[in-house]
Length: 170
Ligand code: HEC
Image (cartoon, rainbow, N blue to C red; front, side, top):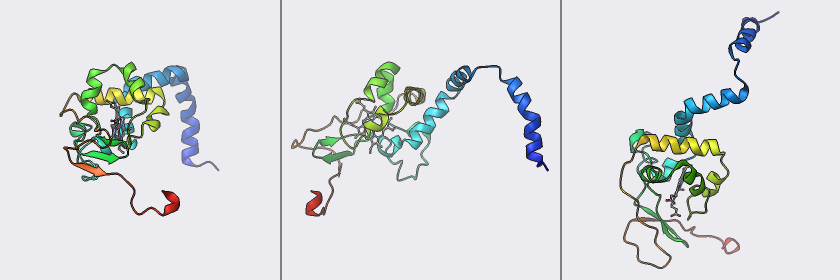
């Protein structure tokens, strides 16, 4: 005994096959072009880019509007690397090409930037992220330059060093 759903599927399947003459590759390409913006937006959210690159995003539990996203953070992260600042990506993407972006995001960066996660992303996802951020347009000020270890720090920063480690973990 077939369920209504199975009957509907049996009816619709031939129609679906007939209605999609594009090859899987073509469809994928088409999909990619139409959805680059939405895909990029999704990857930025799921990839956690706002957590560091958007001031106030975490505090708002992820409810800040898109136009406030990724403007960089003047509050640094301090560790053995000195102090690093989440870069203003809204300005960065306006100043480099999509090809340059692919190189940038795959090069080692200071902690806590999880650059190795971007290194392992597919080109098309990285391109979608670039296009999304670029479409948001330029906004905000450049983040401060990183500070070398032992140099004076003139900005607020978060101490990113683990505390209270047992001797075996030091
Ligand atoms: C845990 C915090 C954190 C997260 C999460 C994070 N970043 Fe970063 N990001 C940083 C910091 C800090 C820097 C500065 C690193 C440096 O100075 O080398 C940075 C630098 C960058 C740069 C380099 C800019 C330049 O001019 O060299 C890019 C590009 C970038 N981040 C993209 C992203 C993207 C895309 C995501 C999400 C997939 C992301 N980041 C997630 C903290 C973070």
